[in-house]
Image 1 (cartoon, helix red, strand yellow):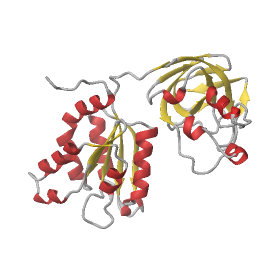
Image 2: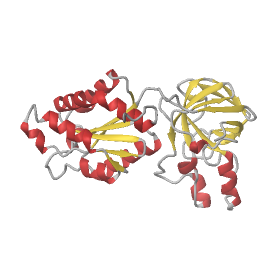
Image 3: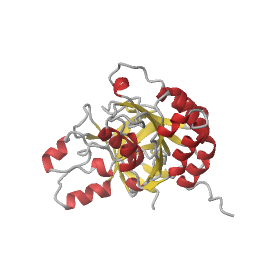
Image 4: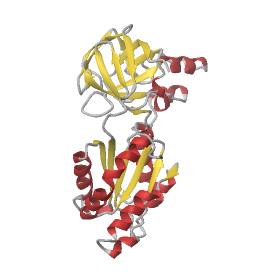
Length: 313
């Protein structure tokens, strides 16, 4: 895979969901994005990038688009950005970026989709945060570097609770999981509080695994016998492979504390490069469960990432 390229165009827009216009140069601001661009801010999608080869292919099929029409900030020639993993580092002109997301969900059609009936940005675009600011202009070099295999593991925490999502109950489980994961060295990329809705959970799991490529997703709640408890079903529905030992170990150790742990239906699975683990709903049970698995989990995540070797002798 080629890791060197050139900036074809730099584009900005004042409003989201609209085509961007090319500019001669742009200032990238650390931890913010491009000065004057509508997508800049304190979030993980500060800068959008697109490979110009993808745009050229779209135009060969009759697209008729110009630079910035897909809403991209930086159009890059020579590097297939879609093939880079999250965590890759891009030196673009005087700025340094880190890829945070591959592709995106399209909830409402943008101007280009309405005009030509398709938009490649949700499939081919990538997004990044600004690590070091600086000026970028067309013709600047682009140097990509794959992520450090020994970088900290990333994690996302999802709490499932109808009352919590409705604001009728404070979420204690999510913060408990986040605190333990951060103390163990994980980088938390997102925390979500969702109702006990199977469709919403499936969508969140797919997005976090596919687009954000997190190493670990832990869910809390929705694993009991209630008719609304659908967390295991949603998790199994998005799985590529089963990893039952993690959930089984949580149950075995939890039954040393209370026999009611046998009623827990939590599962553990793998989707692409992400391990998903269902935890019980109470803060106490979350802390106990994570305490059981965090130690040995690091080795498994290393194997999944490819940074650790199998332990066969």
